[in-house]
Length: 293
Image (cartoon, rainbow, N blue to C red; front, side, top):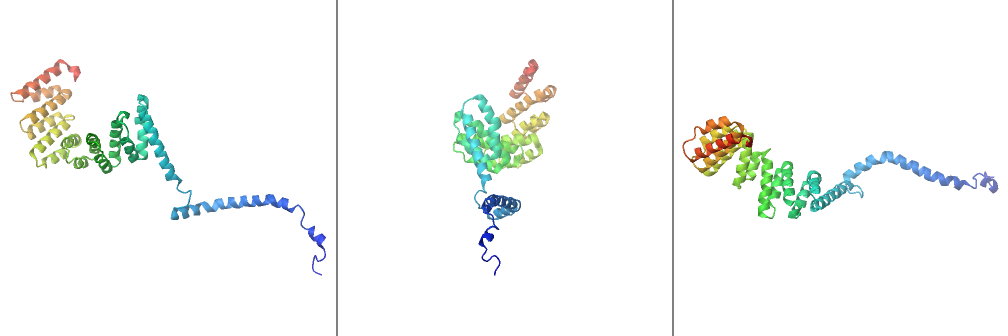
């Protein structure tokens, strides 16, 4: 006789009738335990696998979130600027706009181009121009050149180049190659930092008029720090005429503010003529109203 043959009643008693009740809570417990085990070993491999494939659903949330945040920041900034409220404008220019430019300067530029003139469009464009010039000078110059309105394009491009000139005046001069007034402003900035480089640049100019105007700009740039050096540039590099007289008076004005006695000594060597008369009038006015300095 085989074991348990002809003993069905006894065999059935080996498995209690309520076995399914016990198993019903063991199954989820086992699944939970297994899932916790997998949580410890799977993420690293799964992440590495995703890095190779890069296409699993639900794994591209970060770029999407960043894009959503940029869009939200743009809309909030537009609404704040359009409110017409002065305090809103201050908040936008000091906080919202810098935040958007830090996130995505190109988005800030596009937003600025769609602002109405009354929504501080010009101020926003200028601020974007200066910040983009700091982040990426080449991209900023390219953007400014593509603006539709000619006047707006020139003004924004000037802000870009002036901002670039503070760190890289040579690059700014290259960008402003065909903008004479802008080049003169950049040379003035360069002269205030490094007069030797500015003078070398001016000496290389082949056009006589451009060279004269370059030296005038350099003299004005040096007048802020060293009016005596500026006066020497006026005397040695500028030909007699309206440009020399105009530059000399501008340098004199700065010199009077910094050192009235030194300015008076310089005027003492001026030749007789209209320039001397105007210079002496400036000295007399400064002496009569010293507080105005």
